[in-house]
Length: 202
Image (cartoon, rainbow, N blue to C red; front, side):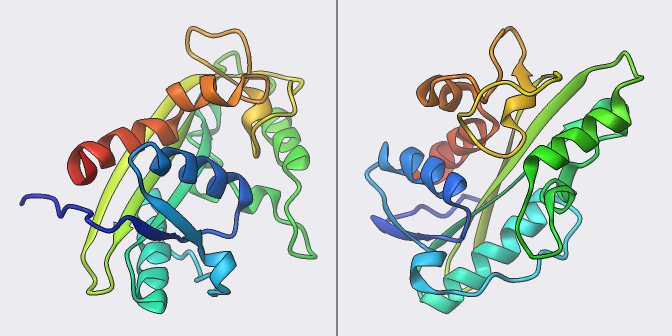
């Protein structure tokens, strides 16, 4: 089936995460698409009940598209460690969840290190699913990955989430140390967006 083309020049980003909003808005801007976020519109955050990145991104994109009456894009991403059988994976944000509803990624990174420190296999990867959803329920989904290794202690104060403990394959800096433009060029989000742009934008 031929992917549906995005003809709108302004869409909703179905996120309340400022880091994800910033990176996705920058990617869309390269194709002349402006955004407003679900947070700015005061839209509620739906429960993420699926067990895949595409599934959770679809929930968020459809909820925003139907609530706003316009095309929405959602991102679901996560950090996986091979020594932990792919954990935290789709539960990446849950590992950082605090009782008061905030998220502590320093604590989450420490948990990864504590559980995986005795395994020589340091392979890790980031995954990102991007889903475009239309108010009529049509969706287009794309998955991208960035492979590398996890390191300890974390390094760098750029990026967000688990970025400070991930070194992409062939690199020496963590995502937390890299200039934003350098990270965007090789990130899991960029890989997913390249697929989305090829199918629905270019």
